[in-house]
Image 1 (cartoon, rainbow, N blue to C red):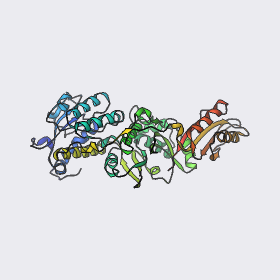
Image 2: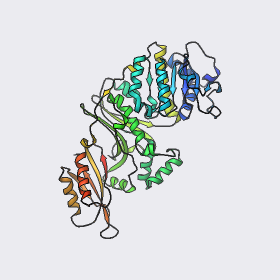
Image 3: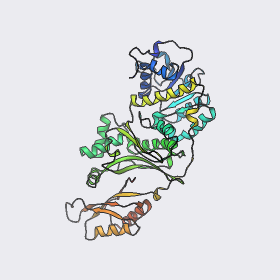
Length: 448
């Protein structure tokens, strides 16, 4: 950790006049990392803020639980009001997670004029615009770098570096669990369940991984990104969200055959009159920079109208990477307080309700895996069925022979750019005719 070897530990120093006084809501993985960074780099951080950071209160559920050495037992409380209602606390750091209690406490802190730093993507996805409005009205700051991308400075980049430009497109690997699982399926030949179990054993996936593998974690992050990238007030429930549960090992083999890899992406585009926001498995060329983001790493590609492409890459989760982002936000909010300019960070966030492009009107290319009993004319019927609704084919192959004549075979189709509603309507028409032996699989191919 950065800082001189003799950096002071705030737990051993007496309060000094002019300090920035912190109250933490939560002291789990990320909260412990925040305390460790603040303790190890105390003098360095003081120089960056212009005043020492002083932890005053830490809200916990179980005061008897063992915690990081940087957490002074004298700070511990189980009473939320000791943090949000204490007039001497300047900045409230919300790292407790969840929605209900966190929302109430963050609103109380903002209403009391305190700066708030949060890493809570669920809270921001569902209530971010409302909380930003409240902070602007109250003249205080709401900072949330840690909510997306762990230690990747994506929020700061959108808020500051792109302040003079307009983001036209973003595409990101924002969930490390999905990225790890898909990588192990592709490289290790594992099935989905086996890859998930391996991720759990390594601590990369929760006991219940559905929030990650179902795409909902990535959707929450995309909502937060859309606030800054597109100035959009969009409810999380409006996004098109697909997880990775339907992907099979053979999909990776087929994608490889055509020169693609499968990644789980959060995608946003601004068309002016509407925006696209969607989360789903996506085939991307093996030559793409995103295709080479491996393991639990995250990466977000931005395209500015003037700047062009820009990519941020790094560790998207974990105690210290996320804590780095949280402490950086504390520094920003603390500097604003010292300068007597609270609220400047948040005041620059401008949002308005923006319509989402209906999913059926999305236009991209498609990978289709169709299972049907082998018979003469099968591929011609599929090509004709898609062509009847204006879907043009780029390639269509039967990758493997059936074990027994007449058994179902896989037909893999790559389309040219087509309207999604036409593709799904053509597949539904052929399914209703009894052409398929199993439900068709549709995955999108990302186009620049």
